[in-house]
Length: 140
Image 1 (cartoon, rainbow, N blue to C red):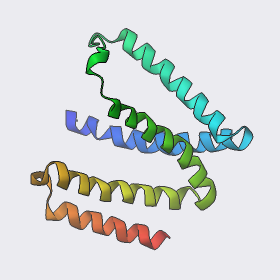
Image 2: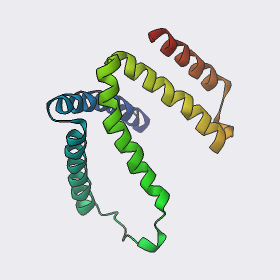
Image 3: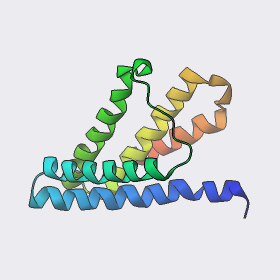
Image 4: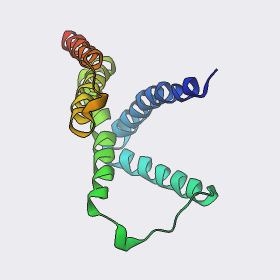
């Protein structure tokens, strides 16, 4: 198996992890609240990142003078997913929610690629995105 094939396992794992994480957060949210679930999720993630940082040999010193405040947007967007996904799943069901989520990711990915590197955009990718959007529309 080539290295590329191993890397293609990453989105498969992430697909599973996203579904399972959302299910667990939904259950915690039902038992406690979505905010408590988000706190537990973030504390766990923070601990894992600290451990990974400690054991990696590729770490760099953090220079606060080079920090850009827009980088905080990534955390905000991630946190909005952690809170909104379980809520959305509880309202429309997991299949419909994730079909629409994946379609939105593909469509916005096409727009992002057009804005950042249009040379990589092809008619094949645009047609695929339109087919995904049509499939998502059928699930509504």
